[in-house]
Image (cartoon, rainbow, N blue to C red; front, side, top):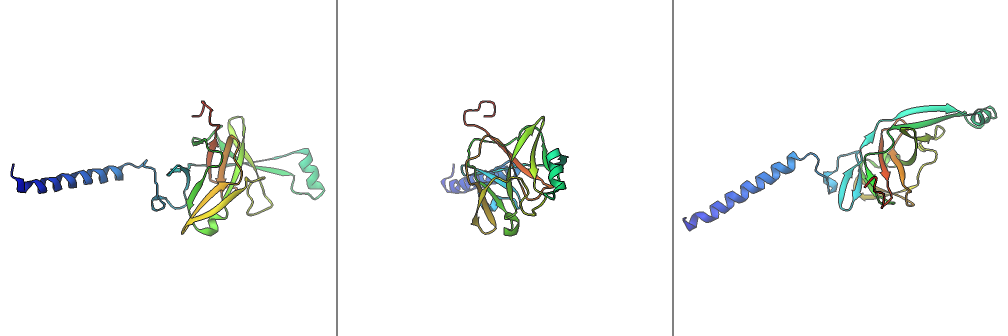
Length: 194
């Protein structure tokens, strides 16, 4: 083989390799973003190490009910007497998280970021539900799980629960109409979910 042709062959092989890598990266729609510029706007991500894992959203059903004590309180002027619930299908979220204080990120406008709330859902039969707050515009859940919000970059915010979360069902939402970005906290040794 002619030695002067060797560098050209190496350049062609390198170009073909880089082209194949670029096509593979573009065609893998399940690729996990790892940088702010890879985040989709208005999409919540869980930080698993350095990787950003998309938190899927569930559609919401809204339920209402009354109780004798609620009706009595309403008659005395202490509220409506009607309890409203945000209801999610299924007993558990698909996203299982072992960390008790997970971190979440979202690329969103500041005014929208301040509306994001976290709730602990209870499992009732084959659904998950949480009580909603009808008297306050910004407080969706009754009670909400306290979270810290930190700006990590221009238009990017990180959310972390103020205290470790107990194993259970959780979800982030901006309104009582949903949708809910839901996840499950599991105990580290829970073989059922790991």
